Amino acid sequence: MQIRQFRYSEDNLGYLVYENQSAIAVDGGAVDDMLSFINASGLTLRYVANTHSHMDHTVGNHSLMERTGARFLAFETLLARPEIVLDNNRLYVMATPGHTRDSVCFYFDGVLLSGDTLFNGKVGRCFTGDTEAFFHSIRKILEFPDDMLVYAGHDYVKEYVAFARWLEPDNPHLDAYLQKYNPDHVCAILGDEKKVDPFLRFDDALIIGLLRGRGLPVKTALDRWQSLLSLM
Image (tube, rainbow, N blue to C red; front, side, top):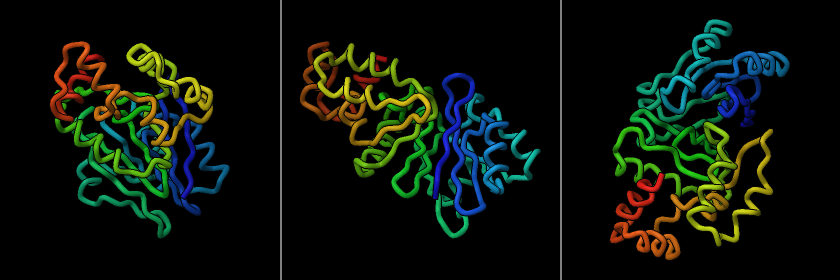
Protein backbone atom coordinates (compact mmCIF):
# COMPACT_ATOMS: atom_id res chain seq x y z
CA MET A 1 0.00 0.00 0.00
CA GLN A 2 1.01 3.62 -0.51
CA ILE A 3 0.53 6.80 1.48
CA ARG A 4 0.12 10.43 0.48
CA GLN A 5 0.36 13.29 2.97
CA PHE A 6 -1.69 16.51 2.72
CA ARG A 7 -1.18 19.68 4.73
CA TYR A 8 -4.13 21.91 5.66
CA SER A 9 -4.96 24.66 8.16
CA GLU A 10 -1.25 25.51 8.40
CA ASP A 11 -0.04 22.61 10.51
CA ASN A 12 -2.65 19.82 10.22
CA LEU A 13 -1.62 16.71 8.32
CA GLY A 14 -4.10 14.34 6.65
CA TYR A 15 -3.53 11.20 4.62
CA LEU A 16 -4.69 9.03 1.79
CA VAL A 17 -3.75 5.36 2.04
CA TYR A 18 -4.35 3.52 -1.20
CA GLU A 19 -3.81 0.26 -3.02
CA ASN A 20 -4.50 -0.21 -6.73
CA GLN A 21 -7.72 1.79 -7.23
CA SER A 22 -9.03 1.86 -3.64
CA ALA A 23 -8.29 4.53 -1.03
CA ILE A 24 -9.14 5.59 2.50
CA ALA A 25 -8.87 9.17 3.77
CA VAL A 26 -7.61 9.56 7.33
CA ASP A 27 -8.17 13.02 8.84
CA GLY A 28 -9.22 14.35 5.44
CA GLY A 29 -9.34 18.08 6.02
CA ALA A 30 -7.54 18.85 2.74
CA VAL A 31 -10.66 18.00 0.76
CA ASP A 32 -9.93 19.67 -2.57
CA ASP A 33 -6.30 18.55 -2.69
CA MET A 34 -7.27 15.00 -1.79
CA LEU A 35 -9.99 14.85 -4.42
CA SER A 36 -7.65 16.26 -7.06
CA PHE A 37 -5.12 13.54 -6.27
CA ILE A 38 -7.82 10.87 -6.23
CA ASN A 39 -9.14 11.92 -9.63
CA ALA A 40 -5.70 12.30 -11.20
CA SER A 41 -4.63 8.87 -9.91
CA GLY A 42 -7.79 7.03 -10.94
CA LEU A 43 -8.62 6.12 -7.35
CA THR A 44 -11.96 5.45 -5.70
CA LEU A 45 -12.35 6.74 -2.16
CA ARG A 46 -13.90 3.83 -0.28
CA TYR A 47 -13.68 5.01 3.32
CA VAL A 48 -13.29 8.10 5.49
CA ALA A 49 -11.89 7.73 9.02
CA ASN A 50 -10.20 9.75 11.75
CA THR A 51 -7.43 9.28 14.26
CA HIS A 52 -9.72 10.95 16.83
CA SER A 53 -12.79 13.14 16.98
CA HIS A 54 -11.32 16.63 17.45
CA MET A 55 -12.89 19.01 14.96
CA ASP A 56 -9.67 19.93 13.17
CA HIS A 57 -9.35 16.27 12.15
CA THR A 58 -12.99 15.62 11.24
CA VAL A 59 -13.63 18.86 9.34
CA GLY A 60 -13.42 17.24 5.90
CA ASN A 61 -15.52 14.15 6.59
CA HIS A 62 -18.89 15.32 5.33
CA SER A 63 -17.58 16.92 2.16
CA LEU A 64 -15.49 13.89 1.22
CA MET A 65 -18.41 11.53 1.73
CA GLU A 66 -20.87 13.81 -0.07
CA ARG A 67 -18.61 14.23 -3.10
CA THR A 68 -17.45 10.61 -3.41
CA GLY A 69 -20.01 8.35 -1.74
CA ALA A 70 -17.31 7.04 0.57
CA ARG A 71 -18.37 5.25 3.75
CA PHE A 72 -17.55 6.73 7.15
CA LEU A 73 -15.86 4.42 9.66
CA ALA A 74 -16.74 5.65 13.14
CA PHE A 75 -14.63 4.92 16.19
CA GLU A 76 -16.91 2.09 17.31
CA THR A 77 -16.74 0.55 13.85
CA LEU A 78 -12.96 0.74 13.80
CA LEU A 79 -12.66 -1.04 17.13
CA ALA A 80 -15.17 -3.71 16.09
CA ARG A 81 -13.21 -4.46 12.90
CA PRO A 82 -9.55 -3.62 13.66
CA GLU A 83 -8.44 -4.03 10.06
CA ILE A 84 -9.58 -2.32 6.87
CA VAL A 85 -9.21 -4.20 3.59
CA LEU A 86 -8.14 -2.27 0.50
CA ASP A 87 -7.88 -4.51 -2.57
CA ASN A 88 -6.76 -7.51 -0.49
CA ASN A 89 -4.27 -5.49 1.58
CA ARG A 90 -4.89 -4.58 5.20
CA LEU A 91 -4.70 -1.35 7.13
CA TYR A 92 -4.70 -2.17 10.83
CA VAL A 93 -6.32 -0.16 13.64
CA MET A 94 -5.02 0.11 17.19
CA ALA A 95 -6.84 1.87 20.04
CA THR A 96 -4.55 4.43 21.71
CA PRO A 97 -6.61 6.33 24.30
CA GLY A 98 -4.97 9.22 26.09
CA HIS A 99 -5.04 12.34 23.92
CA THR A 100 -8.76 11.57 23.57
CA ARG A 101 -10.73 8.53 24.62
CA ASP A 102 -11.40 7.66 20.98
CA SER A 103 -7.83 8.05 19.71
CA VAL A 104 -6.64 5.33 17.34
CA CYS A 105 -3.55 4.73 15.24
CA PHE A 106 -3.49 3.09 11.82
CA TYR A 107 -0.57 1.02 10.58
CA PHE A 108 0.60 -1.07 7.64
CA ASP A 109 3.85 -2.19 6.00
CA GLY A 110 6.23 -0.20 8.21
CA VAL A 111 4.02 2.91 8.35
CA LEU A 112 2.23 4.30 11.42
CA LEU A 113 -0.43 7.04 11.29
CA SER A 114 -0.24 8.23 14.86
CA GLY A 115 -2.64 11.19 14.85
CA ASP A 116 -2.21 13.35 17.94
CA THR A 117 -1.08 10.44 20.11
CA LEU A 118 2.52 10.75 18.94
CA PHE A 119 3.85 13.73 17.03
CA ASN A 120 7.24 13.92 15.40
CA GLY A 121 9.35 15.14 18.29
CA LYS A 122 6.89 14.81 21.18
CA VAL A 123 3.74 13.05 22.37
CA GLY A 124 0.35 14.75 22.28
CA ARG A 125 -1.40 16.32 25.22
CA CYS A 126 -3.44 14.10 27.51
CA PHE A 127 -6.79 15.85 27.26
CA THR A 128 -8.60 12.90 28.89
CA GLY A 129 -6.59 13.24 32.08
CA ASP A 130 -6.09 9.47 31.98
CA THR A 131 -2.30 9.50 32.00
CA GLU A 132 -2.07 5.78 32.73
CA ALA A 133 -4.12 4.83 29.66
CA PHE A 134 -1.95 7.20 27.61
CA PHE A 135 1.16 5.54 29.02
CA HIS A 136 -0.02 2.12 27.89
CA SER A 137 -0.88 3.51 24.45
CA ILE A 138 2.65 4.88 24.05
CA ARG A 139 4.13 1.58 25.22
CA LYS A 140 2.19 -0.20 22.48
CA ILE A 141 3.69 2.16 19.92
CA LEU A 142 7.17 1.56 21.30
CA GLU A 143 6.78 -2.14 20.49
CA PHE A 144 6.94 -1.35 16.77
CA PRO A 145 10.36 -1.74 15.10
CA ASP A 146 12.71 1.24 14.99
CA ASP A 147 12.38 1.59 11.21
CA MET A 148 8.62 2.20 11.46
CA LEU A 149 7.78 5.51 9.76
CA VAL A 150 5.75 7.79 12.02
CA TYR A 151 3.26 10.09 10.28
CA ALA A 152 1.58 12.41 12.81
CA GLY A 153 -1.54 14.57 12.84
CA HIS A 154 0.31 17.92 12.94
CA ASP A 155 3.64 19.43 11.99
CA TYR A 156 5.01 20.76 15.28
CA VAL A 157 8.56 19.56 14.64
CA LYS A 158 10.49 22.78 15.23
CA GLU A 159 8.49 23.69 18.33
CA TYR A 160 8.88 20.26 19.87
CA VAL A 161 12.57 19.92 19.11
CA ALA A 162 12.98 23.27 20.87
CA PHE A 163 11.15 21.79 23.88
CA ALA A 164 13.42 18.72 23.83
CA ARG A 165 16.47 21.00 23.68
CA TRP A 166 15.19 22.99 26.66
CA LEU A 167 14.82 19.81 28.69
CA GLU A 168 17.96 18.09 27.44
CA PRO A 169 20.29 20.69 25.88
CA ASP A 170 23.17 18.24 25.46
CA ASN A 171 21.22 15.69 23.42
CA PRO A 172 23.55 15.02 20.44
CA HIS A 173 20.74 13.77 18.17
CA LEU A 174 18.62 16.92 17.97
CA ASP A 175 20.53 18.71 15.22
CA ALA A 176 20.62 15.62 13.01
CA TYR A 177 16.90 15.12 13.54
CA LEU A 178 16.16 18.68 12.44
CA GLN A 179 18.36 18.29 9.36
CA LYS A 180 16.12 15.44 8.21
CA TYR A 181 12.96 17.51 8.69
CA ASN A 182 11.12 18.21 5.43
CA PRO A 183 8.02 20.42 5.78
CA ASP A 184 6.75 19.07 2.46
CA HIS A 185 6.82 15.49 3.73
CA VAL A 186 6.76 15.32 7.51
CA CYS A 187 7.70 11.97 9.04
CA ALA A 188 10.49 10.24 10.95
CA ILE A 189 11.42 6.71 11.85
CA LEU A 190 10.50 5.54 15.32
CA GLY A 191 14.17 4.91 16.13
CA ASP A 192 14.91 8.61 15.65
CA GLU A 193 11.86 9.55 17.70
CA LYS A 194 13.25 7.49 20.56
CA LYS A 195 16.52 9.45 20.39
CA VAL A 196 15.01 12.93 20.56
CA ASP A 197 11.60 12.66 22.27
CA PRO A 198 12.06 12.69 26.06
CA PHE A 199 8.52 11.35 26.52
CA LEU A 200 9.55 8.09 24.83
CA ARG A 201 12.64 7.77 27.03
CA PHE A 202 11.07 7.48 30.46
CA ASP A 203 13.42 4.55 31.19
CA ASP A 204 16.57 6.38 30.06
CA ALA A 205 19.06 7.12 32.84
CA LEU A 206 19.64 10.68 31.60
CA ILE A 207 15.94 11.48 31.64
CA ILE A 208 15.53 9.90 35.06
CA GLY A 209 18.36 12.09 36.33
CA LEU A 210 16.77 15.21 34.88
CA LEU A 211 13.44 14.39 36.53
CA ARG A 212 15.07 13.58 39.85
CA GLY A 213 16.94 16.89 39.71
CA ARG A 214 13.58 18.64 39.45
CA GLY A 215 12.25 16.78 42.46
CA LEU A 216 9.76 14.78 40.39
CA PRO A 217 8.71 11.16 41.09
CA VAL A 218 10.84 8.57 39.27
CA LYS A 219 10.25 5.29 41.14
CA THR A 220 8.28 3.51 38.39
CA ALA A 221 8.02 3.89 34.63
CA LEU A 222 4.50 5.26 35.09
CA ASP A 223 5.79 7.75 37.69
CA ARG A 224 8.43 8.94 35.25
CA TRP A 225 5.91 9.20 32.43
CA GLN A 226 3.55 11.26 34.59
CA SER A 227 6.47 13.44 35.72
CA LEU A 228 7.37 14.13 32.10
CA LEU A 229 3.76 15.03 31.28
CA SER A 230 3.78 17.53 34.14
CA LEU A 231 6.49 19.48 32.29
CA MET A 232 4.25 20.20 29.27
